[in-house]
Structure formats: structure tokens, C-alpha cells
Length: 83
Picture (cartoon, rainbow, N blue to C red):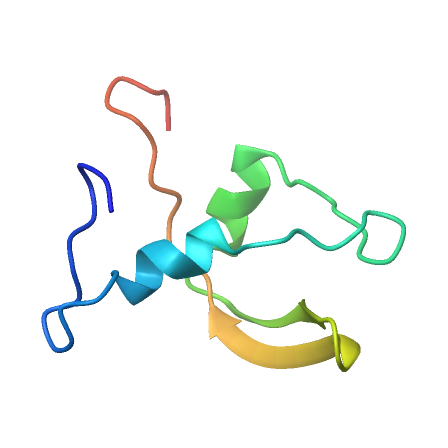
């Protein structure tokens, strides 16, 4: 727990979302390519439904690939940032 997370309301144990971030391991770049998009490209995608591929790493089953259809929202930018 930290200033942003509290105990799970149902169990009194650690916040599951905080635990997920604490245990997060990023996939190796040579297996899962990362292609950051410029903000202008994100604005162009806003409102569109696209296919998203993401990967999970599990010591027992290795890397598994998941594909989902998602709808892109407008980017959330800091105040004062040019849109």
C-alpha cells in the first residue's frame, strides 16, 4: 500500500490493482515489438475500433498472445498541452 492505494474493501488485504502493478514484468522487446505512436496518430485513431494484440508472461506456460477488439478514445493530455 502507498498514498495512492488502500486495502481491498472486501478482504482487507492489499489492493489487487496495486499488486498487479507491483508484480508487472514487461515482455522482452525482442519478442514483443513496441511501436510508440505520435500523438497526432492517436488523435486520428480516436473513435475507431481496432485490433489490439497483447501478451502475458507466465513462468509455467511461457508467453501467450491475446487479441481483442477495442475502441480508441481521444488521448488524455496534461493541462496546457497542445491538442
